[in-house]
Image: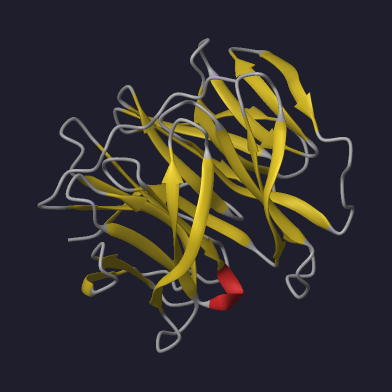
Length: 274
């Protein structure tokens, strides 16, 4: 049974991450970092405009993407780690996630959500930023399979989940193909996570559900959500069997965080090492 676990109504909750008994997530439009620990919700920090993603940092605290930069947030301290100089003002940062080597992958999206001005970037431990994809409209969900030989990726308006061959050592991706086409569903694919069996869980923004998708692209299950604008998902809890679902505030039941118990475990979150 799905239940509401954060009663504080946000504008655009996104980017949930479970790390060391705490759920972290952002309110993108309010520029806020939130946490949920042992049932207690807290607004940890307000960064400014648009905090799009966060990840645990190997050096302690969190690393977040906001404005044009990557920031280290620990306690009350906020420090700029890297600022993108060649910035396209038609875009903002969107979803981001660290891989098993600690690289931070993050995409940009068109502010009007209409034009392919966005891209996907990766920042490595030498603070070298590399553009991996371009011609993207709304860069969104990211994930990797269990043995880190494949990367999954969503550009929301395409209504597809893409799969790439992934080289963990070099951080290179190649051989893009469509894993699954979700055109028959209402809404568009947004954030995602991968469980311990290698299956993808994809939130449908405007579809009011989360789909479970096999590594072969077969839709094997779904969870209905009270809010139609489901934004992202992650597994957490003491046994990693609680699926947390973030939503946007576009309706009475939107703008909350929901949770449902699962029969399958999630995977541990990778620490960022940049």
